[in-house]
Image 1 (cartoon, rainbow, N blue to C red):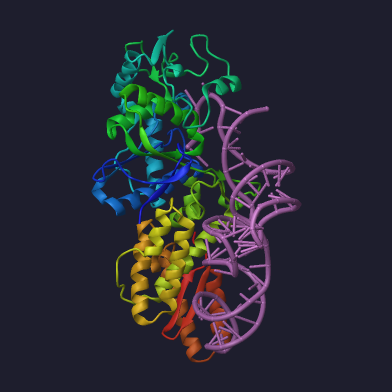
Image 2: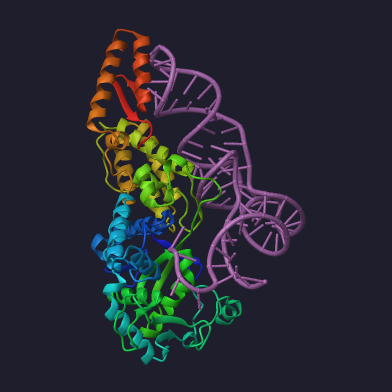
Length: 460
RNA sequence: GGCCUGAUGGCGGAGUGGUUACGCAGCGGACUGCAAAUCCGUGCACCCGAGUUCGAUUCUCGGUCAGGCCUCCA
């Protein structure tokens, strides 16, 4: 079975073949850390985490190098720092920490590298200098600009011929540009803004060159996979590629380009009680990270995803179903620790997570109804399959009772015990009264042959 | 204006030239003191028009609608 990935460059699914199976490289554009990140910003985090995990499964954990950068030089960061009267590092450190914590709650593994623009300045300056030497960039009025006419392939990734872009340009062209499409590699800082020394005067780098330099420094060019949101295809990735190719004489830059679709918020408002759930940080306070991760992967990564509270509720219930099966199969000893073939096949088909999830439900059904050997195998495959993409890693008890503190837990256990006693005495009115009390605590009681178990109906 | 996607049941969302996944919700039944969970069964869809074909939801063309990008937004 081979991994097939949709490449934005060729606009088709192709067999993925890394340059070196011992050293598979992937780079994904990360956040600009000036505030808590929007949920949509976490879609690539989760999507490419799935790809990272799949690649590790296929090529070995040590064979995959994944870099996800952090943009910590930016106008918005400057504005935020100025507003708070602090250095930009205070702002970027704070929001980077929050971002990483939220990503972890969403089940994302830490990338192998997390380069930061401010710590890559030497490489950025060096790359700009090389571009000037190669005749692909020029200095003008304190700026350094990339000369888009120096790169014949410019526009190929996004499918925009240069002349059309010029015709469609809706932004005023700075007077120092040779061509309207030329973009900034280095620019002077405004008074009060952070600046770095360079041969072209003190200033700061343009956004695109940061990524090219960070890739070259952390992974080396060319890389196997470059990922990011669909909105980055143009101009960011187009420009990155132009820079990387012209600075290194390497024609490839990245062997595959993967882009995830956007989250749509439609018209529906998220439940008011949830507050501003557009921020992942707030959303994570209202829903388990695993449910949000599930919701983000429920559709194909390239398709737009309708994001609303119903989607999240359904995601949580889907996980209830799977965790419920595991909980009921507590005594089943898992046999086999490999992901199911059908599950892997789905993932290897350009990360068809929806299909892969369907396989998880199939395994859960087998676990509920199969013969003993079948159950043991289904449990092993379910755990291994789901675990491969970061699901069902919690104890089922924790999933269903995780939000309960000790005091409440002992109170619930007391009520359950009292109800059991009433039921043994066939005092149904009393048993129902107690159940009503539990329901008020959002506790769902499930009577079984071995006594009653319970779980939280909604997690808070 | 240019370029590019997409349109599947009540909701979400896969996939396929002939029998349409899966989950949630619904309905009937089993189980239960009653429930819940689970199990069994079941209803419900492939935007419109034309074409190709023995046969199209799936391919082609047109239309309609929706969304995205067009210089720093995942």
